[in-house]
Amino acid sequence: MANIRMIGVPLDFGASRRGVEMGPAALRIAEIADSLRVMGHTVTDVGDIPVPQRATIPDEVANRGFLGLITKVCEELADETADAIAEGEVPLVLGGDHSLVAGSFAGAARHFAGRRERLGCIYLDAHGDLHTPETSLTRNVHGMPLAHLLGHGDERMRTIAGREPALLPRDLALVGIRDLDEPEREAIRGWGITCFTMRDIDEHGLREVMRRAIAVATASSDRLWVSCDMDWVDPKDAPGVGTPVRCGATYREAHLAMEMICDSGRMTSMEVVEVNPVIDEVNRTADLAVELIMSAMGKRIL
Image 1: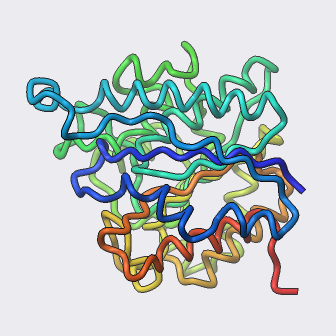
Image 2: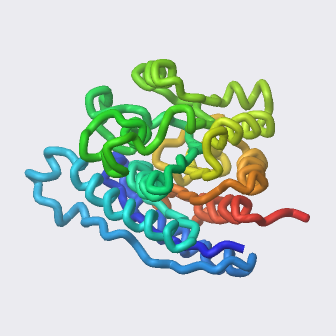
């Protein structure tokens, strides 16, 4: 059984659609802490990382964009995840938009770098999140965090873990990708990132894709970070996300992915992001997110 530190990040500055800042509350309403405790885990909910309310931000600041504000939140989150791991806990980060992974993963990577260990990452998402401020047309920062973890883009954000990149391309596996812009395609090819699209899942099956993804992400490390954007699941099962894309993972495929991650015995940390209760159906997406977390933490049918 694990000692889990649950960290909320009510961040919505990285997305254009409002509501995702209520994701941590939706997951708590869906009884994530009690569900994990019933399984035998110890859960400490440390509350939310402080995030300013949009209404309190002066227009002159907002008009320059939110990258600086997001980076500040990510820096605080990095300290929290690093501290959790140092204390022998499993960080469970509840988002919030996906820009927060630039801090959550960076903190964990910084901790392990101090022990000369690397951290692998399985990134479950419909999107690549590989833009930089220079390549993004929307300027939405939730489309940029992976590029920054890999050492590209804004200097302050890309160095939260230190001068060296928090994540190496060979330690990263993208799974479920089905919506990429051309700069992201170029980044995947040019940076040597392993990317399993929905076509790969169609052709080889989820089980084989996850087997390969786990092998890639853990080839150089015994430590695995799992970053799950709920839009990697098909919108029929997860309607409450800000950027839904048709034909994602099915309900059972999503559970199988989490079960296989748990079976690997390598998962050090996890986050679930982009739950948007404003556009959800009676908290259905948050309920599914809780189920998936439980599968990743060891719940089985038999």
